Length: 148
Length: 68
Image 1 (cartoon, rainbow over the protein chains, first blue to last red):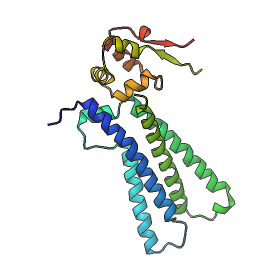
Image 2 (image 1 turned 135 degrees about the horizontal axis):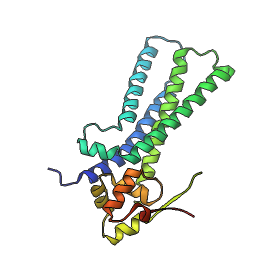
Image 3 (image 1 turned 180 degrees about the horizontal axis):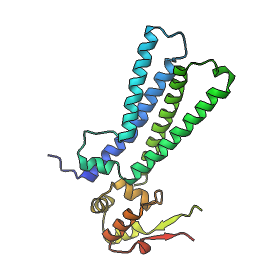
Image 4 (image 1 turned 180 degrees about the vertical axis):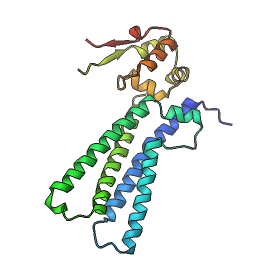
């Protein structure tokens, strides 16, 4: 039986979450950069990679939307997603939105991108905005724990 | 208009000899929330401000002030 209070458990999990969300975003970004969907044609290997990318993107979206760590008790989850976490989540989603808008406008305006198909465009927009939202959330959570 | 909200949460908490974690437990929020409110990083909702004031045995007006 754990002797830690829900507040102490939530504090530890929240710190871990800030780190793990940033790590997940960096790993996702490194896969996007290392295996560019844009290089080469849409052969079977590329389809498999994009399927994997889509699964990763959905998982990361689920982490962002739920605050992650659904395995914790309800009491700890409530503390994990309290006012500050919800505020940080909203700020992160706004950051992701603006990155998505900027990327979309860039794809529309920059001549080099005008030959891209819908799937490639979605790949770029979702990847960039998701990473921006996750990193923003992680940074804000890290700052919230700082100077305690 | 973007005004800063000053607060004497830390002083009040120290006077009552409470840790951030203890106050967080009393109010039903995370320690991170107490920390960000004390540091002026986060402006709490009215409900949270009322709960903090009640836990510290004071009024919201005494706990929070608009900076000059």
